[in-house]
Length: 416
Image 1 (tube, rainbow, N blue to C red):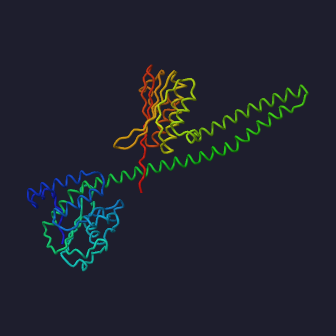
Image 2 (cartoon, helix red, strand yellow):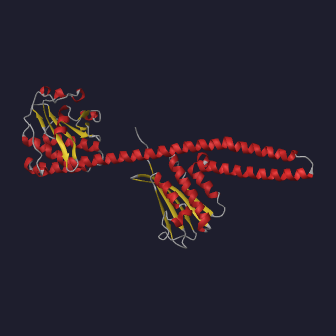
Image 3 (tube, rainbow, N blue to C red):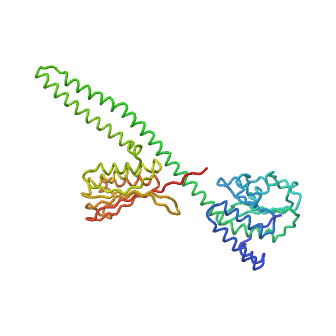
């Protein structure tokens, strides 16, 4: 038995229920659709609403999964709400799978077991119920969203008006269900992107730590030993004046080369991985960074809050590049470095801000990433912020200093 989907089905509510029940039903539909972006809460609310609207005993809401190859039980009336997420049915299998494939309702008055499409699930206690109706949930332009099933303990002769009412309800909530499913997919993709970025940065940092350790334990240590041996050779040189002068000159040049190479090795270690973050954390590292710039008086206001490693590294590098700009280009006498973590209904956000009283520049004539600003490293700072999901904002005017602000959302911990 099947019923075609007719246009303007939402208007059929008026013909299927009395005025008072129509108002209550529409109110419940609106409340269910506006209950939030979650697919499961919406399906659960819909299941409760449908049993009341249709005077049935239980309702199951099966939603098409992201692969569009199977249905998942996403909402159910008690006591079967504990089975939500546990029941999966490939398209074409079982009554619900058949309805999803054919987009047609199915009515079974009694003797479900004799229907070749019926597939019992022990946890859903199908033998306790006699009659059932299964209808597709469809929306335009989203297409099939899922399947609604209602069951009754006592035998019930479901009429075409009963089926039409279920189709009306299914279509009314299908749009909200489709939007909820899209939201879930978007959140999953954003989470996957965040995880990918974190894994890439973590892999980079592991490699940087390894290289830094190799340089420190290998090249640096050998250079230090070489410097000691050069000093010993200088003390042990013969008393011949010509030999002494020549040897002293060569040793001095060798020591200078060692010092230069050792300095470069240490700088390379610091460039690969800021060891101050491991020792002092982000707040301590930023404070140390501010103290390392004697040319400018840097005031600090730093929250002692630890963040994920990849975000701490990004903020530290942005601050490092920005303070170098203050020294090299701003001609500033004073700067202020602020780091805070703000919280609101959307989550936590790290905010780093550096303000200087320098000469400033015209951001319209010299946009971020322009060739004229290449020496300022502004594009590099912006890229560091963007790769961890944040953004960089620069405000400046000639003669009025510069304000650089980096804001980075802090990912919520994943709860298994």
